[in-house]
Length: 165
Image (tube, rainbow, N blue to C red):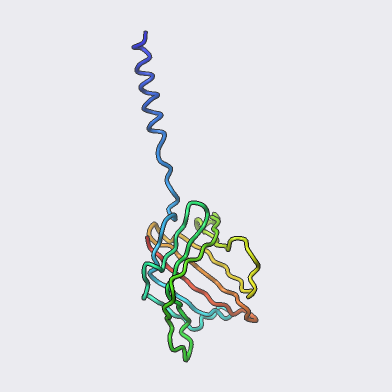
């Protein structure tokens, strides 16, 4: 009689192990390195001072999506708009890392990730940022950052950063 239950127990035993697969992390999780930066001023949907950088990116130019809903961004250069009389469009700085919260939003075009500063004191400068991240493909993501600043009217600065895994 015990031998009749043995095959049933073996089936249950092996099906329990095959159903306990490792949970896959979201494809956006992990560290991504910057490969391209496009920055420009938008004035009533007209691009001004459109500038594209393909270097000097280093290992400090990264973004990292953490499993706890936070997003780290590192940089070691300032990249400026290519405005008239701008002498140094790229300036090396001490590496810095900032942390934001992120929220996944489902859209008809796929998932977007909205970045926001963690709760804290109000921004004394009054600058308003709208940052979103979109997974372009399995190896590329796009961080679209808009700074509305203090300008009057419809002028704002846009940065489109591209990263690869």
